[in-house]
Length: 198
Image 1 (cartoon, rainbow, N blue to C red):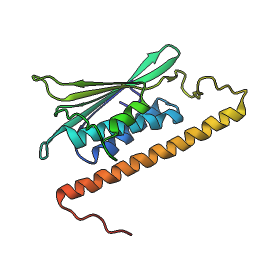
Image 2 (image 1 turned 90 degrees about the horizontal axis):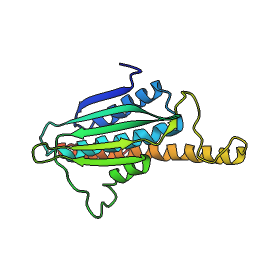
Image 3 (image 1 turned 180 degrees about the horizontal axis):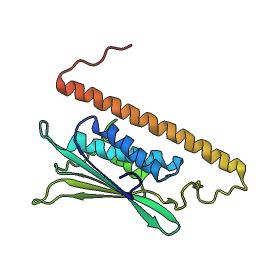
Image 4 (image 1 turned 45 degrees about the vertical axis):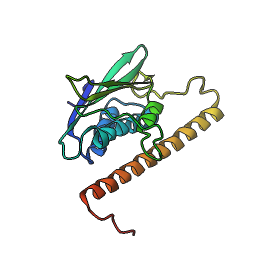
């Protein structure tokens, strides 16, 4: 229900799912007036976590699911979001040298305060990826400033805002590039030719 303190999504592990999850989580954060400068980090981490399930959790031809639960967590005068991404597939350890791909967990860790990977047991397969966002102001509508940056220092505050804006652009570009790479890989799996350059 819109505005609820928790969001649960249960979706098929297929290539279109990460973009659907991004839209739903973004809408849920906006309902809760999550600060704009913190939303993109959450979305990037969620995208990577769900895309990892789609790409790696299930063997080819297996119809798997991804379950995402996001919960608001009060933290004194601040608040956080606890996000759990679950699958019932199999764990594959990341390679020692991931090359130009395989850096999803690194990106998740760079966006989140806490990341905990809970692998299943022999009796219960699957993996739970538990994430906790950095804290933001509890009062809706309040802007969150970087620690130590005060409004009395407009020059530094302006530089922080410009850095955040550039970071959002880079994060958005990274998400689009990863999505394009996944679409291309999905086409190759189906045997479809890549789209002709325009």
